[in-house]
Length: 309
Image (tube, rainbow, N blue to C red):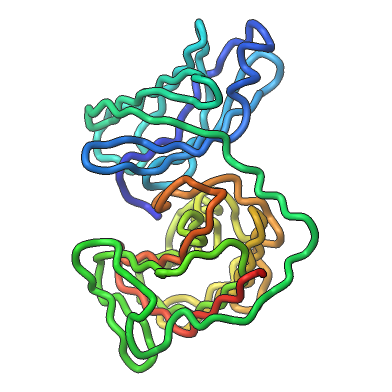
């Protein structure tokens, strides 16, 4: 997903670790909510040590991909870092400050557009499952006739149904299932024209990329069949634009397996956190399936989900 809205992936300005106790509380993954005028949007932060003297990490904002954090400053209990723009048009950095307040990480960020926003973060859940899932009965999410069970994310809805195909003829709203799910197996078929871009969001938080990459120079974790910004496919199984292709995706806790056109390209790999464009950062909760329609034309069909009991 390449757009947008503030994205924060932060070049975490490498903290000099003066005392072990200074940094321990910050280490780990944080599910963040940013409070912007008129709406909230999700972010995600991971902080870990690099050697014995510095901390580094990764950060995801409201759009774009996860970006590396090179250094974090920590003085008198206050964390700060700065990152350059990614897809933002402005030339200014994103500057972030925060501090621990009980079990929360709370702070402000100065965006490339000049806004100062408040944010709060909570520790991300591990979501480890005990034993193998027991699968329920398959659910047909798209009936091939109308948009029953789905709703658009925006005020206008460009999605239409024709001959058993769920089609977005041009950029507009994303489309989201009314139902929410925890662990599941998902079968979905898609077709895109040359130059198109879309994505399948699992629990509304983790994007499996769909993109025509002919002639592209994307990083391997941003290409078709990647979990955007995090997990690259082990091989490229795309058939290219203009033909029907399939994803068979299994998500159990944070572990995802993606079979693309019959080839396993990601196998039981951990998704660290939300990807850009997520609906929220409440990773421990069930979430919907959502299909990206805010870029270019895309078509879907035969969408079937098998939930874990």
